[in-house]
Image 1: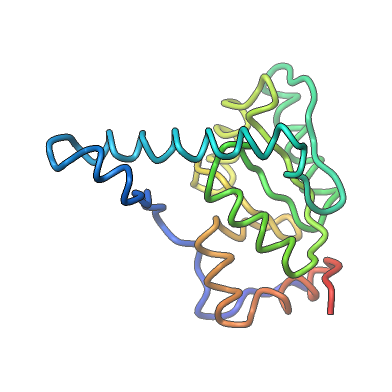
Image 2 (image 1 turned 30 degrees about the vertical axis):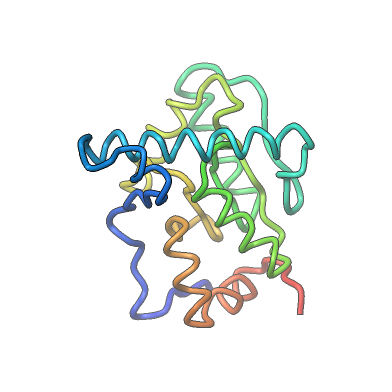
Length: 176
């Protein structure tokens, strides 16, 4: 049975990290929302370059495909959670998603990656995940069918040397 450490709880908010270049461009005259948009644009551009070389996939597989109505979206998400021990719902341009996927890659975790921005039912997937986890943000990381959290959550677990054991306990293949 998978158990979370007693002191573990997924974070309640994900703050936007603003790069120094973005803040310099803002020069103190515009809002943090504009600075955040600039950061996301920088990440999107950088990730697009990575995608041109198709180097973004980690783990056993990734999911693309057509999405239909709400029923098929729920079925798709539920099937992914049932069929794979570690599932990361991600967006190709998201820097937080890239950090989480890189962490799993670095520890050799066999993660199933679902790039929802490559699917026509992207918004429906996020809405469905919101209903299941209380969070609409990505990455949305699931372990043995349970919501584990986002990027900051898995990095915190790893820093406290709890992530690898949790993955092993859930039956996820990890190196070492």
